[in-house]
Length: 149
Image (cartoon, rainbow, N blue to C red; front, top):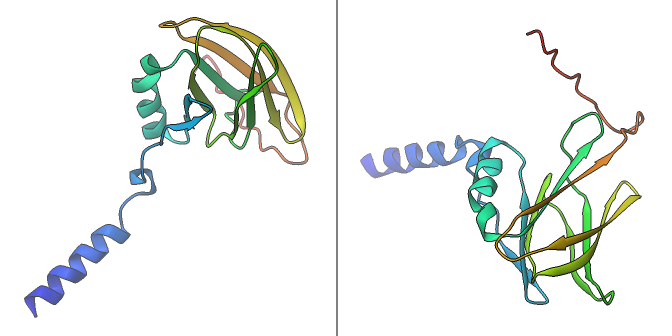
């Protein structure tokens, strides 16, 4: 009987675990390029921040109004136009470790594209902010906090 009670307590503790205790972000590789995305929730943001030194390109996706975005499709092409990465970002942050050089980055949110030419170097993080205007029919824009609070 004691083992049933222990099993029930263990099951309850697993079921009651917070959603933030989910598996950490996983680094992926395409065409020899390592990348990672995420950043939904404070825990995920902190894990990604701690790993920034492993990468040399960081993309941040937001609305112009400041809200973070997820579900942005990212494409990274080298200078010759060859696609190195095609990925649907799991959150507002995307990190990649690219060989030093010039790249074309395309990010698509709700059918609206942004294209950037970026140059990256080994050992130095390049950060690009990609912002889209809010769509009043689909985006829930949080009001900005006032500076006087």
